[in-house]
Length: 458
Image (tube, rainbow, N blue to C red; front, side, top):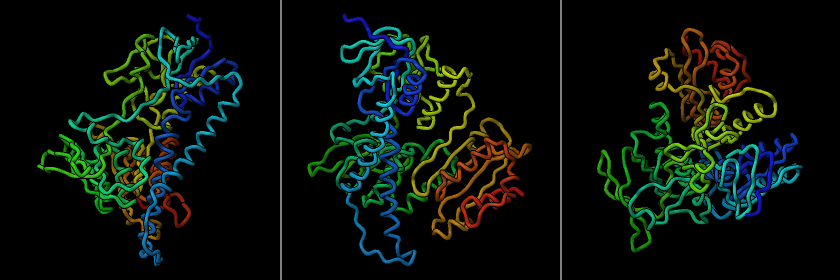
């Protein structure tokens, strides 16, 4: 066997943590090899944030065009060319991917190797017969859509969150398995494109990690948009009919019977890309789901081996992956002692209106026995939302009754993610809610609603 090529660092996976880490290591004078199985940019650029939010934007334009009369604007008949929507999505993805590729190409001391990596020994990996050995190894292999265990599903060729974005024709009736944020974004998107949409959710509410009142508001929005939602329902068998359509037998608390659609989207979670990596060969432990075990410094059970991003489990968000990179950079290159402990994990569900979330939910506070007060207000009380004719949703913030500091927030409303970010900044700055209640915000803005929101506590 040809001796392995030696590097200071091996980065497996060119995702949103792997690329900046590899380029930063190379810039610091550490000879680095970056190994990528498919394409640079990771899930975010290629199958996640970038393409989905590009298509969400197209769906919102279709929605607003149909609502033109509400604003006194005549638009005529609205139609959606899904092939053109897809091409717009592809163009933006290719642009972002090219930008990432350019950063890699410009980094001196960084080699890019295309192919699938697998461990052959501690800190040694093989790629298509070539072997690489590193002083340090970083796993950033991400995840992929999970396939539900449903008898007959393979016979109906189900879509996943990647393949559904490659359709060139609008499905007549899309059945979505799963009521998490991925499933809901696609459900509303395709309803706005013109599909009939049915969501089958096993849990008693959509978005199971959210508070019940927030989930009810989300359900109301989707049903108002014409999305059929079945709660506490479970698909038990799938079959392809002679006419090409798909029949799903559904059971649950209520006997729903059979649902017949034209396409099925499986949105039941994600699994890590570790099955072919062979981490156990390198002494890297994984949990029962295949996720790599790490400590708060992102160290695995193997000395000199780290894991970043979705492959380690926990919240699967791009900004978490990027912060993992910053933790590693601070500790290995800047002499720091950063950890992942107690970092805030904001996120936004890009349905319309958006759901922005940060910090504790009311359910989590109750479970922990932590005292709290709730400031809540419907978006129909927000002047700017009414002016935009976007009154759906609610704002909800938990505060500590003694310190008056913010504990968590949910903003379901127009630009809910941006309003949530303002609340996150207040949490980061340890501001009492009085500061936001009495702040002078520009009028009329969505941020101005924070005055009235926190006045409800008085």
